[in-house]
Length: 297
Ligand SMILES: Nc1nc2c(ncn2[C@@H]2O[C@H](COP(=O)(O)OP(=O)(O)OP(=O)(O)O)[C@@H](O)[C@H]2O)c(=O)[nH]1
Ligand SMILES: [Mg+2]
Picture 1 (cartoon, protein in one colour):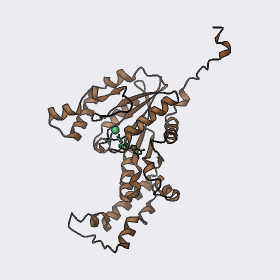
Picture 2 (cartoon, protein in one colour; picture 1 turned 90 degrees about the vertical axis):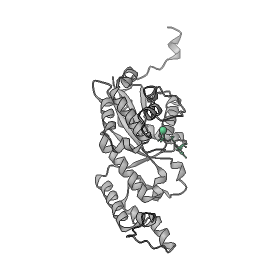
Picture 3 (tube, helix red, strand yellow; picture 1 turned 60 degrees about the vertical axis):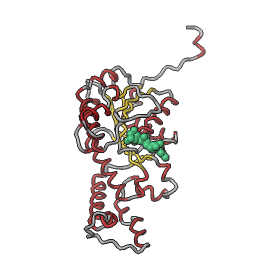
Picture 4 (cartoon, helix red, strand yellow; picture 1 turned 45 degrees about the vertical axis):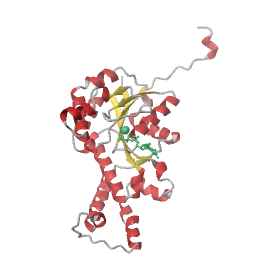
């Protein structure tokens, strides 16, 4: 029996847990079953109590105290510990039927997505045919306010693509917190961010702002405190163009829009999730009770 799941990932504070909560609420309202797995050992508050919680296996505070690690080292240790105790996941997930959407709420440390090969191992374990065999997709969130800073937006898109290449499961990129920017961008402009458009770097409002203010930048400034020079010099521009060119060449990244406080928006993302994991194909047709015959039984 197949199982179905989504792994909600992305940098710190992008709205992963809020999205998980909104998704669970939406599923409940639509009479669907969710199984919420918290894999963030440092998480503290939940709108919906997790059905399975990594904090019941290992506590990041204990790890930091006992092993004298900082928060990021502590998190990596917790994940290595989880990988050595995979029964913790198998025992809880094995009996779930195909009706459930298993929602994995991931931590925000970027180290987890880029520096170490733990996530690909975890995903392989969860999706392995003949074992848990979860049809899993990744939902990678990037905060929509990033589009207001072109360099940040392209760097974020590069991190999304890197996660995509690393995990090898169906992948949805999502611009979260759209409500924060919807009044600041015209629809036409937003389109250029939905699929990263390298020409965005040619009309960076930050450049125009500097020009208007008559600020001249010394791109060769040696003073590391001269952040404006570093972040707008010719070398930085070449780097951003290279990143934008790379994203265009691969042509893999495009975004869906999400406002977690808008149920319609959450529902739309859920239909994409359902589609990529082919959730509906596996559902048994449900028998709808017919009141005419109920009395005969
Ligand atoms: N305006 C707005 N704020 C949001 C939205 N989603 C989340 N937030 C806010 O963003 C902050 C961070 O949200 P979380 O859901 O905790 O983010 P996270 O990605 O789980 O954070 P970490 O687990 O610490 O990496 C909170 O203050 C949320 O209320 C959204 O769609 N719109
Ligand atoms: Mg969170």
